[in-house]
Amino acid sequence: MTKNHLMNRAGTSIKERAGKIRTLIVDDCVELAAKLRELLDTMPELETVGVAGDGEEALEMTQRLQPELVIMDIQMPVMNGIEAARTMEALCPRPRVVLTSAIYQSESYVHSCLQGVEFIAKARLWKGLPEVIQKMRGENT
Image (cartoon, rainbow, N blue to C red; front, side):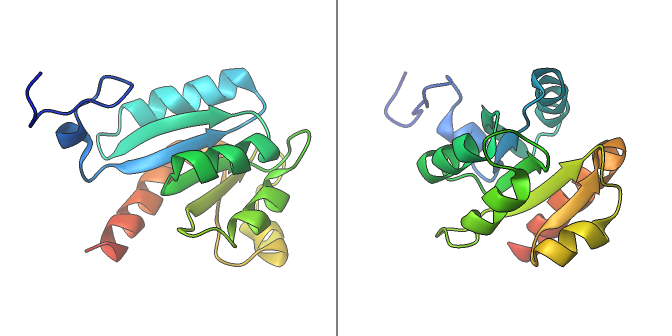
């Protein structure tokens, strides 16, 4: 490995991941988190930096890993996604938060609790996530 070809701990070239959106997955359902990670791994503009199982773990990982995007389930043990998203509002830099749920299907519920977060129902996540990514790319140009 040359000096110009630095590698991170995952073995990914820093040069290769330049411009990628650092993403944290938060879901207490291990199977759903794994499926979401599989989906994200097919999106070249994303780099999954971690997976958390509850809101408290998400906060710790967000502070340590500084993701730009957090995709988080609403219903979780220890601390739910809405509480975690409220706490993330005070972080600097503040990540973009996408809340998701299999139970709640309407963004009006999320927006009545929080402003400035996206909501995508789990059934629509595969279609809605590319729209969020495109929106983030547009804000960073």
